[in-house]
Length: 580
Image 1 (cartoon, rainbow, N blue to C red):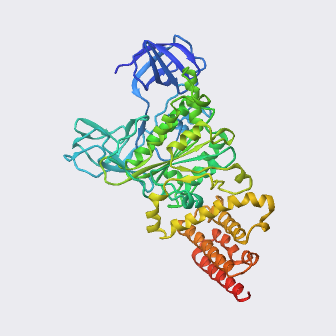
Image 2 (image 1 turned 30 degrees about the horizontal axis):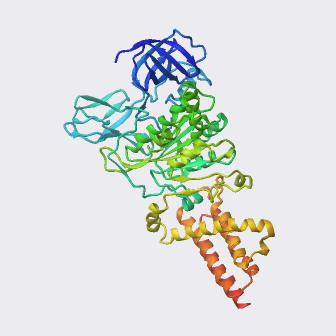
Image 3 (image 1 turned 135 degrees about the vertical axis):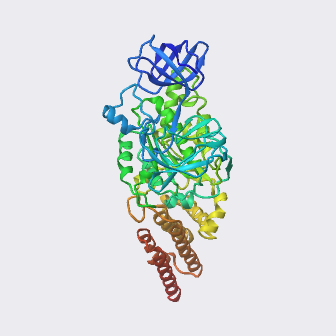
């Protein structure tokens, strides 16, 4: 489609109206003399309404508007890992070199480095017939990560002229049918990338955080929401997940967060070491930074940019974890644009289509068989939500809950008591327990789910008893209930609490979590038997060996120590029974 020039007739913040421009929905346009980037979001007869991804101050009616005829797309190819982008895939380090610390208007920079040469190794020969998704060859993108060069969706035919060599992303590496193939693909961000088929989520995303892995597991290809008020620890939880979860690739979207929080992420991530390989964590990470003082329309686009990059790596057979921090700010950007469009507001001023947009975003998660390869890939989406005043009944949290299967509710009261991660175990839930149970039974222990159910029951019982305790004190409770409170304390302090800044306790493997639960369960069983045998609850609670369980969290040799603690518990109970 040829370039067409229209004319600006109305400007309302990031939303502008143009005339005499024949555009389709979601076409990218260039607005004004400075050629600001915008996207068509509404067509009303002769009027075309555009959201501009940059600051519109100084624009005047009568300035030209040019239609590019293309949708908002991202460049997908080698060089994305280690990059830091803004919401529309402009690399921030490149922009900083061009203009300093503040992004000027109308500045463009491609998402990939078009000058760098990559060593390409072909995996097929000329003359072979290929279908969409077939792997033509690979490039080592960062140390240890192979970037597969695939036939783009919708392209098939005979390969012609494929060879090894050193290429830039613009060089043609071969032809498939009549289509020229490069190391780079372009893809419209609002369109999900096609797959062969979706699979059931049967494998957990292991996070190394005990409260997540034990009580509220997330499956690979699953969706989770992590809502919480200011200061409850959303960002630290997201960073812990990014650092430790067993995904191959991390896409971290700082969507409308405060500049100081995002600065922390941008400063910390490049120095973090990947615990699996010992190399920098950035080697397998893409960061998208769109802070609250950046243009509001680009914030709305940043989520789609991130999920499109995640889908691209999924198509290579990688497990990708996408962290969106936070979808509330994304919804606020949508609300601002909707109000400028003068659309009918829904609840709390959010647009009526808020739930649909959230569902469309989370639907792009999943475990799949990608096009062209038999390897499985997955995108797991973890979205932070920042409800105003910690009110979980507000529309963004409620709409998110309808579409996500795991809910990790952060609690400001727990954070104030220095209980971290401050996940409230009574209001959180996971709907993946049943589908993941066979995996845990096979790979960790047959009685894994039994122990988890026991823990959940004890913690719920403790919550009921605490109301009575606050009125009359714990000594007034029957002995069995006093024992329940003590077992619940062990679970809270030794399993649910975790120190993100301790070199050993920062990550806890599943076997260690299991043995901690098993040892507490053993103490509970021995204590129940002793109580039935007539031993006073005061003596049972004073068993000293059980308090050593907590020390194991900070020790690498957990198997041996927990075995010794179990023997000591048995010996102390034997003495109690003998001295009765």
